[in-house]
Image 1 (cartoon, rainbow, N blue to C red):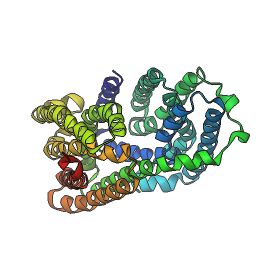
Image 2: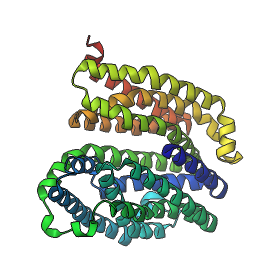
Image 3: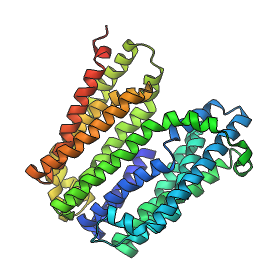
Length: 406
């Protein structure tokens, strides 16, 4: 229900964006979202998974739990203050890097500087709640947060159009702090836990091993997409970049179901598997159950593409239909590879994950430059499909011993 609510709110927001800011505004929002995703990972140092693990392990050990919470909170506080200063005082620089010289939205980065501490701490608090095993509260936080985000987006977009849409992207996540703080305060006396004397560098050292994989994926991935979109804006125009962003939004909605299933159901099973035979069984379960349903789903989406565009967006976005085939094909390759990629996380194969991720992102960037010159905006989705195919081929080769194991 939480996923369905998130998708429903996303669809409403997409319709608003389509009506009030058009393809060009959609491209700017996409750039800001990519930047914010990278910034979120840097501001939390990629600690989320590690926080969940260590809080869960020390739930009954009050003194150790207090050390974990105090240490991480104080560390993140220092990081976000530094980042906020860089955002606020270099707002014009960031505006030029993210939006280009033709747009003046420096105010957005000054507001982001003020909102970032609240956002980063809310992510930390949510990880603590998750680690304490309060899964229903995590779901409630997400549901309430998404609803607040919708209300804020509607009000700001109606009032300020493109500027409002950009402000909604940076303000809505920060408001999640008040929801998470309400729920965390019911579990622990939060302010009584934050003491400098409880700071323990050993905890940061332990968490650092969990942050490396998260940072590589969550920081470099959005930055590559940002670079590709800026290239599209410069070579093909901002409206074409907006069409690609629209296709990306549609893709993110149906991929959310697969990623949720992987995180909730398959990742724990992979983490607990002890032999290649067990891992192989989990892989084949995924390929025999999830993959066929996904292929049927995207096939239906392809034939309904005109209806989907008119329903979710406006007639101005009809050129997006040319991007569906390449995007859907690439997403099939992506879904095939996701379960294999999760094996890196499950077994903490840090080096292999980082190398494969960086090679994949480099392949995506350079192939997109090449394909855009030949096919125009369709070249972006074809580059994604090509890169996803190569990544799948690499993973199948890397884990070949699991598949041929008898």
